[in-house]
Length: 218
Length: 192
Image (cartoon, rainbow over all chains, first blue to last red):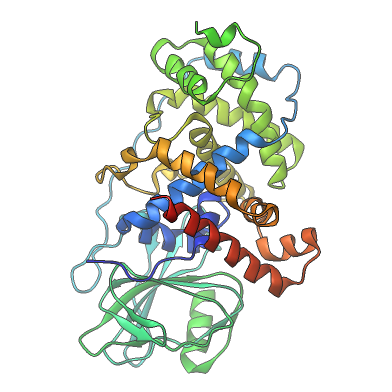
């Protein structure tokens, strides 16, 4: 299966630099786990990080810093953290598993958001303020409409939807700027499940948008 | 000990790789001290540029070097060079630090393997090639484009900060970032 829609270079660069907020970062990580091409790009941007690290003008450390660290490495290392028990990944409707990149998220129950639209919010222990949502939208239905002030990232997990920019299938990632008005509609063949996060504040738009906005704030 | 210790000159990439391998195989503290002298002050400077306070930058540079000592056996020079590997460790520690800062729970013990590319093998193909291509491509960008790419790497709100740093309107910056990265992509792919 070939992937048609990818994150922008800027997004991959920010991901590699560690500068993408948590929720969009997880959407991108989900994409990367299925996309060799984007992984190679991220590796290139990481190499850029390495080369920038080489090029900075060094800033002296505190005088005793190395000595302290050498003393610290002599002390016995803390016992390795017990590997977290591997919880089985939750199964999504249609039998697919929640992507492994999301294994540290807690999946909320599916809630009704409007006709043919359900959503489940994923919470991230490390960052409870992050907003990451699974959407499950019926065939022929519109994805919830919501303006937003930053970028919106949507990774298709199953099914497909189309908007003015093309058709998005599993493995594809749609990255939309707030300036672009697009209205994805799920293709008639079946339900679509996707993972979505946005940067910036959501603007209210349409009934679903209002619902999603209030939902995301719960 | 390697000959790195003998010359006072800045160690090159291969020598740095070798130091990490010595730490892994011999628990060689002298190799560690050399590596530390090279990287700790650079890490501190890098983290300062990313907007951290001096004390935090110092602490994270220390933590990064401690991780280098502990995780040296995971270093694989075929996947990434010393500087790149150490950069990714510092990046992940910085992310963990920022999360801790928001008074949330423990850092993700697996945060370093968010990408699971173990099975595909593509990582092994390219290290030397990737770094060489990148070097050539960065040199082929105009100075302004190279600056834009670098600033995108360091800034949290790249566009608005680049705009104020370069004295350009926001819209102009947005399109220039896109152009610079597009050119970089063409250059990287053109060399295939």
